[in-house]
Length: 322
Image (cartoon, rainbow, N blue to C red; front, side, top):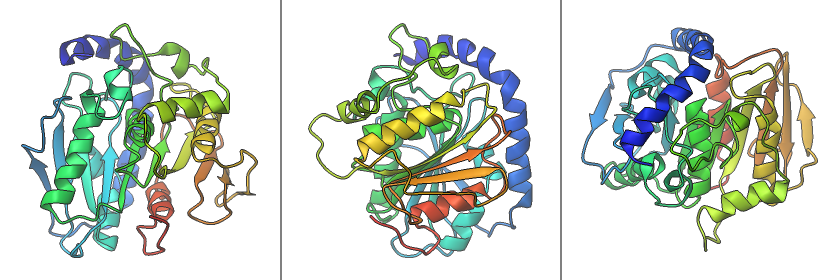
């Protein structure tokens, strides 16, 4: 899909998302307000990172005390957001100060500030559009900042969560794990008419077998036989923007893609109102971890959730499989 076509389709996205984005912005603002004071390091825009078919902007936060070979976290904003806003209003940069990893913030740089997760180009390895631009950001960071290519992760909210799913499908060779806050499965938002919005997916009307969902992931990078990235999924039970049905469908997809049972290896409640299930392992770095948040709408991540994502990745010093 061309950038011109994408701009035309953004109006469709905004109609559905604008009413729900205010609570999300409020939650993110609270998250940022509760974070500790950042170090003297600052957010920097990077240009010339590749051919950039999605015409995105790239911002990087490298903490002052980053080690010689730092890990990389890509943090992807929601519709109507920006890379700098996601930096300021979430806890990822403050966690980077604590644990010494680099944070890359893509910026959608189009009217409406949504990422392309719908076009055929976006849903295949190096196919073009936004996911390819983000992959180029990762490769540039590894090459120019001496970052550790074996420790690259991605997270995002809403449009950024959908992008997280897409990046793990398109680029299993780049990313080791992802954490998606209120997203949809890889390929669920696919369209062929130039629109960036898929109402059937958003409203939970698209369901598939685990095998069919897994095949979409495997088909994004034909011939790839290496390991698949682990996935952490978050969703509020009363989300009416990207329906809660998508949470269960994403569990189907990633358990199948990673070849683990859909029967939870562990079920617990780490916090009031949360139900956490782990698949394929009971440990903190399970292949798939899913957290359902009771009575919450399209407002994730809330305060403290970013730290849980960082722990799932192993960036808190707890290790984790590469």
